Image (cartoon, rainbow, N blue to C red; front, top):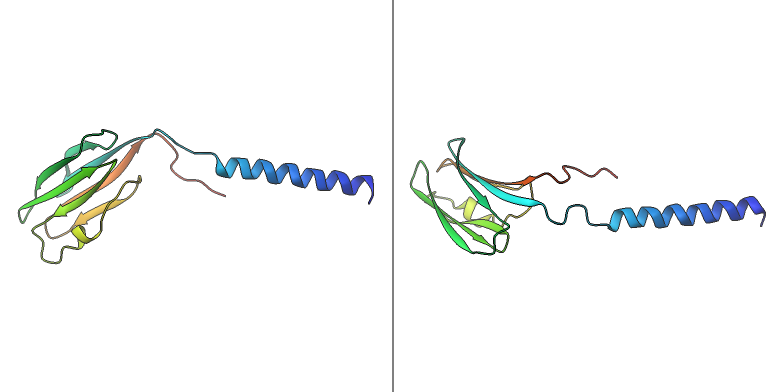
Length: 122
């Protein structure tokens, strides 16, 4: 094994460890998350998801009242007057970009963050 081979091996190990460190570091630990509630496209409520208090929020849509549940930094559609209950069956959302939409009731809830990373390209 020549001196150049040893240099190449050491460089590969160093770059591999540096890449591993970058991939495993947390990107945004304390991003301020909130849920944006819209009825017919109009914002009717902003929900802070970083609060420790669990709550239920009534949202009046085209068909009636949808109930949102906020618990532990995430939210879900607890009940809705729509016929198929797709929005209710979607479950919990907690990451920026996730959306719950109830088309018949014209209600949507999206998770948004203040700052932080929009995308990571590897």
